[in-house]
Length: 97
Picture 1 (cartoon, rainbow, N blue to C red):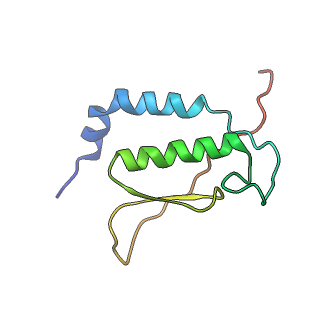
Picture 2: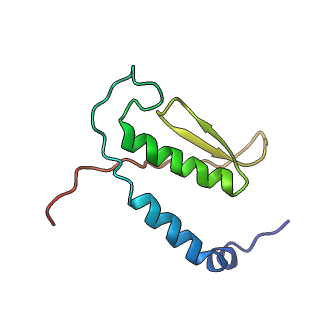
């Protein structure tokens, strides 16, 4: 199966923009780090952002893994070799500008 990624992005442009807007609305600023806070060691906002992103992956047919709120994986297939991308969803405190 061949995917034309440019065409796919253009076809889903409105959905992608809406998903990004909904992600940006989440205040994912780390409140306090507490490794005893199960599933949300970096605070509720960061947990909400991680859960949201993983739900997008599930919605789009990927398998997801939540590593106790520390990180998550969105995966497709079960090949031995894979491409990985790293990112983060937490933000710094909002400034005045």
